[in-house]
Image (tube, rainbow, N blue to C red; front, top):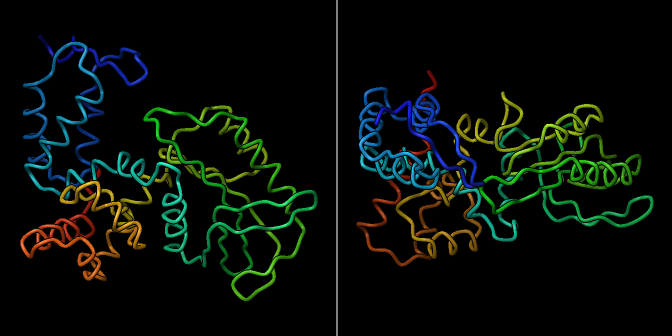
Length: 285
């Protein structure tokens, strides 16, 4: 069967034509060199069949990339790794705080503030110079979940209730200047239009195009610890519990591995993957 005749079954059940260019681009974003991408693509081709699911396609690509270099597979698994910051989203909020901190913001999480009408828990508060941001995080476990327009409507109403009130954060008194809605999921077209019209900042897995979550992570090396393929699920949970959220934090403080009781060989493998992931370049062609 020709590749052009192959159809892919998405998580939603929708059947779409196989897109070889899209697959190649996702492989390139893993950081693999051109010849490595082509080698992986050829390996995947040999396992394609009409009706293959996106889950199977992902697992094929993941396994083939891991053969080339574990760091490629780790980077390729970013979307899944973000879902592993659940199930409630507590660690996702802490990770988002670190995302903003990398841009020079002072951040804190889970803050209770009194609005004009009611009290609110702000997931992440961030400040830089005269900016004070109220960031609402919407974590989703489902693979293809989309955030509808009702969510930014809700967030905007909360932001409006705390506007023009002075609050003390980070040793300063400021009023909230901007509201943000951040999600690891997708946004519907209406949600994007609403955010644009009412000047509510939106950040999702693939939006905005030039500054989406996946782009920010690759550009700044802010990979969550859940990316590492050398770690077991229970080991990831232990590291998160001990406040090791980012791969670069593990590199900076290798003593985190003592909480896992791994031998020297495994410790070396984990650290090698961590360093390769953060330091290897992402090639975009």
